[in-house]
Image (tube, rainbow, N blue to C red; front, side, top):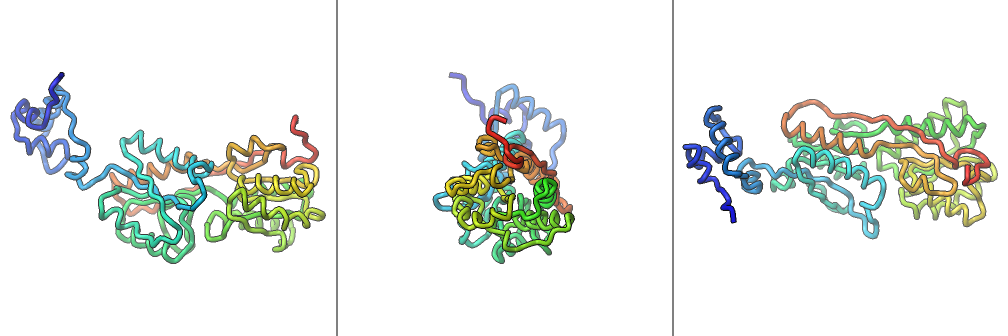
Length: 347
C-alpha cells in the first residue's frame, strides 16, 4: 500500500514549518511567493491533498451554498418541473465551481432566521426558493441584507424592498399569452392565477390586465379565479369555471400543472379543449408536450435562472459588493395545439 502523505511530510520536503504549509493551503496571512511555490511543489510531488473539512474550519467557510425550499406535506417538491429545473441549474453551477449544495426544507409556518445558518457556519451563501410576501419573511430578508450576507431570491420580488433577486419577465409572458388569444377574436378570457402572496402571480395578473387594456377590453373580475399552482387545484376549480364557457372561449392558467388539471376536470364535465375553449399554460413543463391536445405555454428559463443565482452568490462571496442584484430573464410563448381551434391530436 502506498503511504498517504501528510502535512508534516510536505513541510519536511519543502523545508518549512507545518504552520507555513497550513497557511499556504488555507490562504491565511501574507506568504512569500517563493515559499508558496516550494510548498505547492512539495505537495504535488507527494500527492498531498489537504483535508477539506479541516480547511473549511480554518477559513471559517463551509464550501456549501444553502438552498431554502418550502416543505409542504404530501407534496413531492423535487418532482415538480419548477423546482427540479431550478435545482438542476443551481447544482450544475455550484458543482462546476467546487461548491456543495445543502438542501434546507422550511415549513411555511416556521419562524424565519436565515442569519443563524451563517452563524453556525453551515453555509457560505443562501439561495431562497418559494419565498412569499409575508411579514416574517420580509423581516428575515431585511436582516440578511443589512448584514451584507451573500443571498439571492429566485422568482420573488418585494414592492418597496431592494432584495437581491433573479426573476423572469412574467408581465411580458402573461401579456403575450393573453394577446395571442385576443388576436383570435376572443375578448372574454378566463384567468386561473396562483396565490397573490407570490410576486410572479401578481405579475401574471398585471400582464393579463395589460393585454385586455391594450385591446380596449374591460376587465371582468368574475373571470379571474385562483388556485394554488397544483394540478389538483386546477381539477377542482373546473366545476366553477365550466358555467362561464358558454361566453368565455379561452382560459389562461398561471402554470402548466393547474392548466393540465383544469383540462382534465373540464373533460370530465364534457368540455373539450380546442372544441369548446382554448387554453394556455405557463412554465413549459415536460408534461405540457404530452397532453392531448398538447398544451400551449410560456417557457420560463428556470435552469438558467438557477445557474445565474448560483453564479451571483459565488461572486458575492468572493468579491463582496454593495451592488444590488436584480436581473430578469426573458420568457417565450410556445404555441401548441391547445390554443388553436379544431386541432386534432394528430396535427
